[in-house]
Image (cartoon, rainbow, N blue to C red; front, side):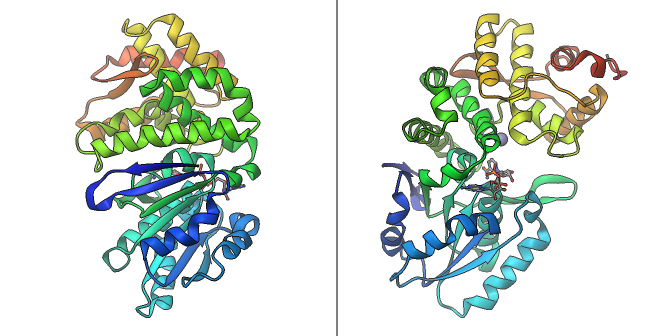
Length: 373
Ligand SMILES: NC(=O)c1ccc[n+]([C@@H]2O[C@H](COP(=O)([O-])OP(=O)(O)OC[C@H]3O[C@@H](n4cnc5c(N)ncnc54)[C@H](O)[C@@H]3O)[C@@H](O)[C@H]2O)c1
Ligand SMILES: [Zn+2]
């Protein structure tokens, strides 16, 4: 078991990571004194798999549990779902000291955390993440949000949980594709600031893909520590430190948008391709050696993530990138790798360099359909 402290003054909290750590939830909640009524926000999949275990774990606790299910889909991060959930909070409240347990993947964490941040101007919540992505990324750092039809995470706030409890046993039931998706973010962490993690992934990827606990424990601990360090330096994303977490995400978001946010381009696949695109940009600018780019590409391929953009038109990707620029003073901005463990942020990269990098990743028959140069 590992405890990682998130030092944010009055908003500090701990992340508890390990096999069997769920058994500590009762004691931890008692210590935190968050209230007498816990609303567990979850979905039917997670509730079926682990709801009974959660209830058993909290048996005999002075905290009363109430389980609220939302549909199992990104669509649950909607304004309507948020209002429905908050109305349930209000129904159940009766001044008993209500707090929220976000019990699920990133969708549940973002939705439940956002509802907790706005209900009565903020009630406490804890994160009990059940996906690898949520354990290494979304449960940490306090970014909570819901989506709008015109874009993801457009309504949100910074609202730190009071605790994160990452139980490794939950990961046993994840599908291989969910592990792959999380690996895109894990490789991202390694490239942006941890060459040892990168080496570890190169050496242990096969074990991680087989969900061996030792490997998982190591990467969840390491990634949590990396994210914590960055969040501690720039909690509200105002000092330009959190931006390195966007490595692979600028081009990645453009791919997701060009694909209309369909499952053809799940986030991890888009980020993997986005990382390859920025490797190519960095190579063209002589900032990254071909050898290191090759190492990154090889690890992405071994994780089962794609190396080629297929089924999209170049012009749609460029339109999505141009749209993104609107939100950064009209300049493009990319996080570029310079070696494993180090990235730099660069703005105003010539469009032809960006276009060439994207084209180099496209299946030839598709890129030729685009009428952009
Ligand atoms: N707040 C942040 O900082 C942040 C960071 C990254 C991503 N996100 C958000 O996270 C979301 C994606 O999260 P995700 O990848 O965890 O997806 P998800 O929450 O949709 O979970 C993926 C699937 O796994 C199922 N599942 C969850 N736990 C399981 C388990 N233990 N066993 C079997 N199945 C299980 C879920 O029901 C779902 O079908 C997106 O909405 C994204 O915007 C937020
Ligand atoms: Zn991401």
